[in-house]
Image (cartoon, rainbow, N blue to C red; front, side, top):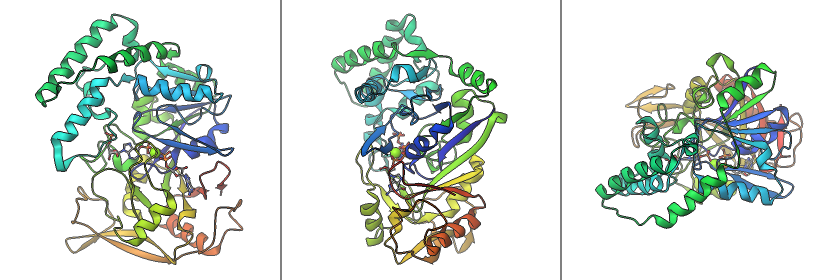
Length: 420
Ligand code: GDP
Ligand code: IMO
Ligand code: MG
């Protein structure tokens, strides 16, 4: 068997959590492969809403095993809060969740360093989620990180060495925080983490594939936030693309099956950085209001704009997307016209190839305009009966992107999902 991968094609928050939850009954295992609690994946069903940060979105299906893979960075305190909230709502989390011993641990000092780095950048700040993601991955790459498996042996010494190193880095940035309370909570949360089954997830996943089990890899963030191919430096610190599933789970490239690429019918971004199709007018505000475009974790206002097909095509190429999923179609229900950016004008030249830099002010988007469908999509259950003008929009996007759109989402609830 091969693994399927589901990941975001834009700047995150495409609706990955909802769709992973919808697809989970088709899978035996759902695995996260990168990112950490910077993610906020929302699921809605039975009139209840859940936001998952580190725990895979397959956790609500009783017979699915969920895995946090080695590519993830885990904050023990936030994990404990999230896991205990799920336990309280009746999820048998200790049975259905397994964690790689190779995940890197986010320490309290990583979060403090994240904040201090942002402060030092001043007006050029990334607008991070403040969860310590950058500093934790920095420690991983510079071979200074602490892994969950490291807590099993000589941990106090390893922890103290890492903390002291961070404290001197903080001091160099002018910060001398008292971390004793944070530290105490964190060390308690480590003990809670040890109550879970800590595994060698690369072996577990590959063994499952040999046994014919079906595995879905759940991406976090989105392709345009990828450390290599996103709008650097305004990106996150991991590879959010399909290749990240290989390194973040120990799955070989020839074991990748279908790649589900997920995008909104428009586009959003949270935090700093360029966004060529951003709308600063009433239309942008209307999308934000109707789409409730506020961060699932930070509550920050998301910047809104039209769908960017230049960026989407780039994302499809980088990820080897075989199937597309379009989310939040219903948010555009009330618009007279719907626009899609089909090319960029750069220095008087028109191109549909994503350039080295999309720095603010260097790109003028070229739009095609389609008539709006002006009907409420939220109650539809099958594609055939949907409004013709909506189908025209879907066919237009498909023809430009060259990959079939197989799922359409018309509302936040699990049930508001149309397979095509
Ligand atoms: P993720 O990070 O990719 O999982 O996405 P988020 O959970 O951060 O953001 C997606 C938001 O859109 C959540 O509030 C979802 O409940 C909501 N949502 C998902 N699909 C739809 C949809 O088709 N229509 C509407 N109106 N909302 C949706
Ligand atoms: P999900 O999985 C949207 C953004 C931050 C910031 C940049 C770097 O819910 O789609 P970081 O804390 O990772 O160092 O921040 O990346 N960002 C996200 N934006 N959705 C996310 O996750 C994000 N995770 C990080 O806003 O611009
Ligand atoms: Mg999100």
